Length: 150
Image 1 (cartoon, rainbow, N blue to C red):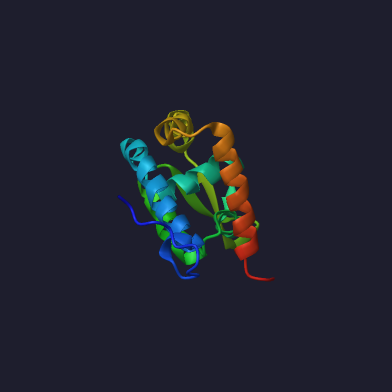
Image 2: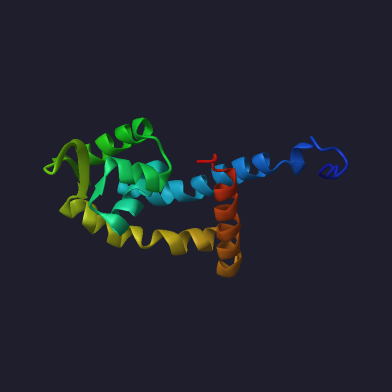
C-alpha cells in the first residue's frame, strides 16, 4: 500500500512539479530507447533528426534554438550523427563563421523507419491521443513560463 499524499506539506515530494516532470521524462525516454536502438540513435540524437527532417538545412545556431540546447551540448551529437552517415556539417559559403547541417541520403531514408515510432510510443503508453495532446499543450505552456526573461 502506498503512502497517502500529504497535501498540507508544501515540500511533500509527491506535490512537486519538478519531481513529476523528472520521473515522467525518464519514463518516456525509456519507452523510446528500444525503438531507437535498432536505428543506432539515442533520444537526444533522435531529437536532432526530427528537427532536421522538418527544417533541413539548418545552421548550428538555428538547430540549437529549435532544440533549446546550447551549441556546446549539440556539437557532440552532430559529430556522432555525421560519423554514422546521417548528416554532414559544412561551412556556409555565404558566412564562413556559420556551420550548415544537412541530411545525407541515408539520413533522409531513416525517416521512413522513424515514422513508426510515434504510434509505437502511443501504444506503449496506453493513453488516448487526445490526452497526450493535452499533456503536450500543458508542457508547452510550462516550457514557455519557465523560460528566462529576454
